[in-house]
Length: 258
Length: 114
Image 1 (spheres, rainbow over the protein chains, first blue to last red):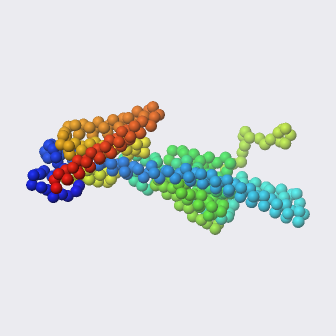
Image 2: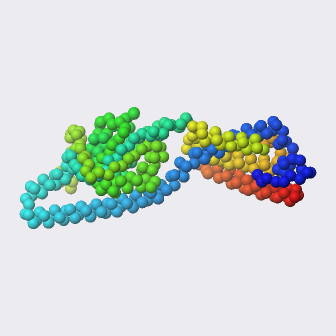
Image 3: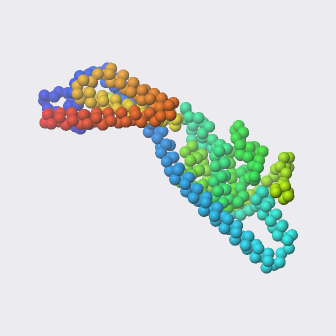
């Protein structure tokens, strides 16, 4: 409100032209009404940042998709280089068929998760939110969910992770990540937070895939879920230690496919 | 007047410091309600300047506007319509009209009082 000189004819302040407002009771009512209004305003202002934080998400998703395509291309090229190099080495040394098969077997064992593997990569630590959950808010949102773990795992694989384990459980083709009450079931084993995900791959790519603006870490941080990524020169990912029994699936022989 | 302003500040203070957080799904309703409240506040200021302020009308307008705006938004959600835009538009236009009136009245009064 502007401060003004008061002339002698106007005894009331200039903004108080009429009746009513100077009465005590009216003032009290107005004070209460404005208090409620201020309260609502403050609540709304508090709620707003969470809404705006999501805006960049679409852009991030776009970039992730782009990155994924480039990564895939790079991976396939790398694979091609490897194969060509292998063939070169094979023909040069005159390797036997048996040795080539053995090599293929060891690659297949890595892919299937049946061998311990080591290499550069990242160790991701996830822990539940330390934010105090406020009244009227579902406390569930501050805990790590199976979705969150799947998201991180998926992001790591799409960034080119070659082997991955969650709290010592190797991620294989049949691995489930499922909520089971207060814990998770992974490979049929109960796992409780904090979660440690070890992934072998290019440490920088893996790290930046998770830290993408509007990406997984940003989104989980909204709920206060802490995700720490450590780049490592050497990460050991253990082998799958479940049983290898197939009750229903049988391999298809070459003749049957025709 | 100062008491009313103090009430507003006190309300904001309480709102910021009370550990109450409205759920994300309710944020839109409250936003529309806040706009309605803002409209009523400026409407009240205008009627004070015009000299026909009535506290009963003001208070009932405040309550009715905020509740109706939220209800309108809810109805829109039920129908799958962005009905709250109607409230945003109506209140937005009214806020601007009221602000214009307040400015005119203040300028007139300033000129007269000089």
